[in-house]
Length: 78
Image (cartoon, rainbow, N blue to C red; front, side):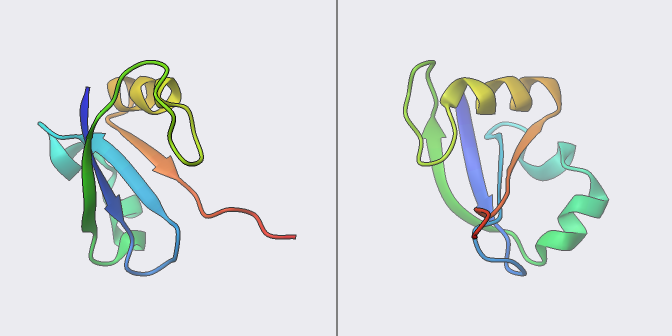
């Protein structure tokens, strides 16, 4: 599955993964409003079992297929 990763301009370490084909069109407007100006970080060809920094590829793929996006929140400190 090809996905594009966008980072938020309003909050550090806030990312959204979306299908490369549909882009941000399936991300809710309210969520996009919190992102400020989304910036493309990278495009990935995800496969089951692939390691990502903070989440498994299967979780991202399932969310993108089900909801149209996967939201990666900043790490909890403390």
